Amino acid sequence: MTFLSKISLRAQLVSGFLLCALLTGFSGGAGVFSLFQIKSTMTHTTLDVTRNVSLQNNRIQQLIPVRKMITRIFNYTTLEKLDKTKSMLLSLTKKSVPETKNIQQIYLATKELIEYKANQISSLK
Image (cartoon, rainbow, N blue to C red):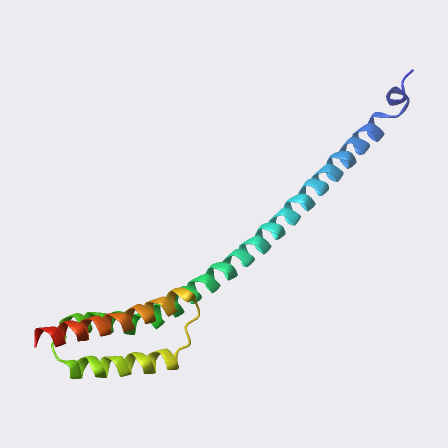
């Protein structure tokens, strides 16, 4: 006879219940572990996104004055205003150290724009 027929029905039911409870415990533990992993990943992702957004906001804050300056340069008609803008650009570049080469290029391009506008105003006089 087989082993299962030798044990009582009550012992079979209890052992089956214990096996189901054990499997439920393992699956619940795996679920809890998975949720903690997801929470950890979400926390790291949130921190990375927040850091990147803060970095982008910082770069935007550096470029807003330059953008306003460029708009004013196009509308200037006198060299005095351009000289004032050039000194503002120099103080801006000294005040905020550019973090990337792109921002440095924008500062250099703005300086060149001031020189080109000065040449344009000089040639129109």
